[in-house]
Length: 49
Image 1 (cartoon, rainbow, N blue to C red):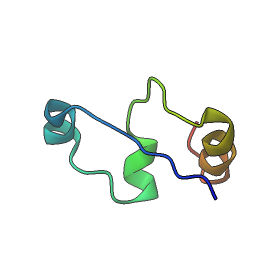
Image 2 (image 1 turned 60 degrees about the vertical axis):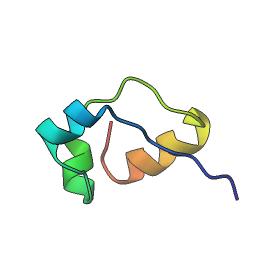
Image 3 (image 1 turned 90 degrees about the horizontal axis):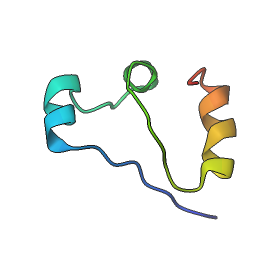
Image 4 (image 1 turned 45 degrees about the horizontal axis):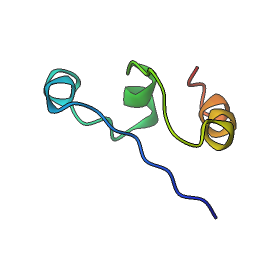
């Protein structure tokens, strides 16, 4: 199994709040992440584009 992480600036987390639900993740802005090929299908299954 491969692990991956998502990172955010503390100022962004202060503004958004910690995204602990799929709904909260759907409202977040993304600009890139590691292991893109593995994460995109997982996000798509949850409706995150």
